[in-house]
Image 1 (cartoon, helix red, strand yellow):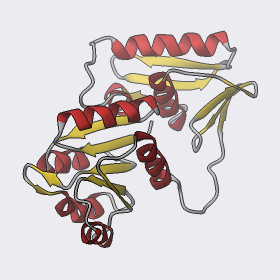
Image 2 (image 1 turned 60 degrees about the vertical axis):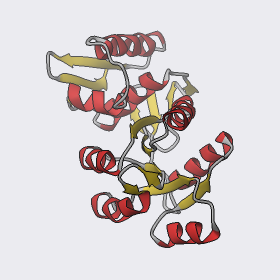
Image 3 (image 1 turned 180 degrees about the vertical axis):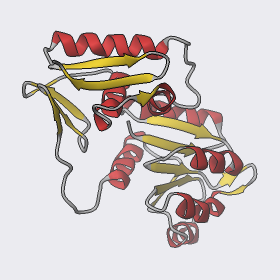
Length: 225
């Protein structure tokens, strides 16, 4: 699942943005300061950063050099109230991929996120095919017997993570990191319940794949025998 880092110190603004991203199928890790954001960048890989400028411990632009050092290909969308032309020029010249000023339309924000995430040129990744299941890693779409199936966003995140490591055990900690955000309230058996639900979905659609448990370690996906 695509993971986005949101660096925003205004609670209500962060809540609105995170909710919009969540409805679009993204995992959002919300950080309030430059220091918190730096720690998150060291701990996880992200596809995009939504970066405010006026933060409690400094200007968000100060984080750009660290972003390029820690995760060179990471897209950065500055989302800020600093709306002067010179501010926008400075932000783009400092290495941001895009610059959006507050207040903004939520749909425009999502369009800019999608534009940032769009891979420039290159070939599309071929779908991963296991049994009757085909998973398009670019479109993040699962098909069984050629028909698209609708999955809850966390079911989709779980399936995508297992598909990327098909035939190999994926650690529980890795699955939790890929499926849930820092701020999610996670019950102790949440992953087990999610795996059971996805197993049932795949079985109901005769996907020809099975999710096996490595007790206490993790899960693996492989073709049914």
